[in-house]
Image 1: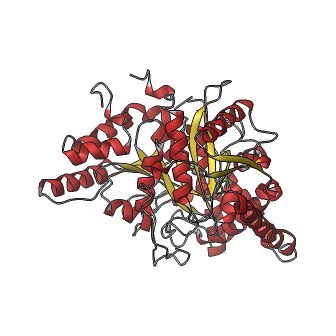
Image 2: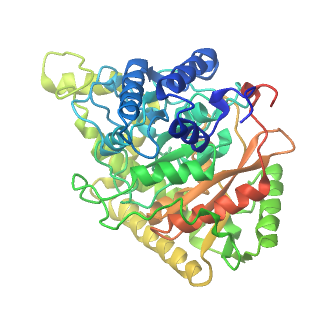
Amino acid sequence: MSPARPLWTSTATELIALLRSGELSATDLTRSLLDRIEEVEGDVRAFITLTPEVALAKAKAVDDARARGEDPGPIAGVPVAVKDIIATRGVRTTAGSKILHNYVPPYSATVADRLEAAGLPMLGKTNLDEFAMGSSTENSAWVPTHNPWDLDRVPGGSSGGSAAAVAAGEAPWSIGTDTGGSIRQPASLSGVVGLKPTYGLVSRSGLIAFASSLDQAGPFARTVADVALLLGVMAGHDPRDATSLPNPVPDYSAGLAGGVKGLRIGVVSQLMGEGVQSGVRTRIEESIALLTKLGAEVGEVSLPTFDLGIDVYYLIAPAEASANLARFDGVRYGLRVDAEDIVKMNSRTRAEGFGAEVKRRIMLGTYALSAGYYDAYYGKAQKVRTLIIRDFARAYENYDVLLSPTSPTTAFGIGEKTQDPLTMYLSDVCTVPTSLAGATAISIPCGVAPEDGLPVGLQLMGKALDEATILRAAYALEQELGPMPHPLLWGEPS
Ligand code: GLN
């Protein structure tokens, strides 16, 4: 690594090498990232809460262990940023909502515990759309996060803070959650790598619930190899989550370089049609040509039920949200707006505590679940969900991996879609099918769109628990594509 290159431009893998060889201490690394945050955070606003003391204490523990001759673990010392919907003991966790503005959890999510056990200093809690409902991070009760490629644009959402922090060099990697696309879509719009794990691979214990049959936490980083490393730390059975899978966790890094020779890749025609920005299509088609050149067998596959993905998702996710958000009642935690009786207290607390999009979802979900409408809406949505799962299964008879853009467009302007929720919901058209099927998918940057110079994300979808295959294909494509241009905030590449 050239000494002229600042530390914050390094990947986690590069930093691990420096830490393990003793050339760099975890404390110096953490300090330098805190300096980087100080430098750009005023523009980016990726964080709701910064936790420098927590990060430096952990960094010191890692350095002390090394000084004693102990091994603090293979990836110890590389700082991480964590989405503020993941409970962290003793550190305020707001879910981007006023209703949890003062909530300090008495316990940590299993995911947060695992990062801690792996020796990763936590830099802070990142911004998100309130309760992860949104595609732009503009639904945060705090501030919108700005895209490091163009500060007038959104970073995507709902994990926009986690994506922007990585894109801006504030953290080499971070954690987000994905219910219908909230890791993949911001990864795409911010030009970083993001993976949504198979439902049940990563524990949901301590994730503030949005839609329980869909929510999954997953990693962001600037390279596929880094995402593979971080996923390995997060994944694995957890007795505290009844839907956690017992399967052993493979070594995701081991098979990365296996290549794509003979890999059967299906390009989903429903996700390449109308509504896809021309520069997005150009870059995706170029990547398809590269994969073919590398020996993949690429074909086109039609999955007709994917056209219904958005409709199904926007019934099931709000229905589950309406039930999950009933717990915010002003009694147990968070905001309380006092009133003369408990019913009034409860309704005033919720009226003041929730933002407009959250209220919209609670109303949609309550309606879809109510007597007389349940069969027509929620019941029907569940049936179509099954049809989507069957469409995937049929496609996997002939293909190993499915391919599409991650988002039909590059990053849109701040304020551009806030008045039109339906247009905003369409941002998720490529990502919701995988979520509904409980399977896995990754988004990787595949260049910038010629018309706006903004990053384009390519999505590779895999069978449930087949993270290894999509990681391998993503790695092959990433190597072939070569280095991505840097966002504006990186300045001139040295
Ligand atoms: N944008 C989608 C929504 O608003 C997905 C959000 C998510 O995955 N958390 O629901």
